[in-house]
Length: 139
Image (cartoon, rainbow, N blue to C red; front, side, top):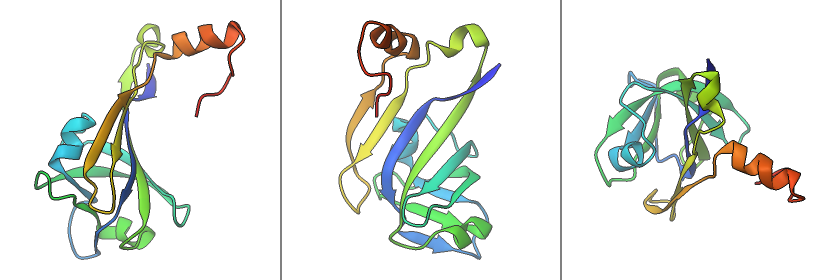
């Protein structure tokens, strides 16, 4: 079994920080659905502004409200206005790992509204292009 990145919520802005709230990262239900993250699912949060990275779990917030709230002890690693990327992983058998298709959810502005959802090619297709002379690293 391998832990593989299944989706990515790219560069959303934290708009709520609450040390006294139980639960770790409250997210707009539309973002959860678009990135296939379930309530209480484990996620990694990477803070672009301060370099902190932490594992936590998702808590469902109201749909289409744009909430990204960092709560409880995780609130010490982020501030209101910080930009973060949120990464959920999945466990897959080795023979399925190369076929994972990454879903990337992009947002528009500080309101964290979705503007685009893109899907990456399975890793084996990227390897084939690299062998054919394409760049080895895709950003």
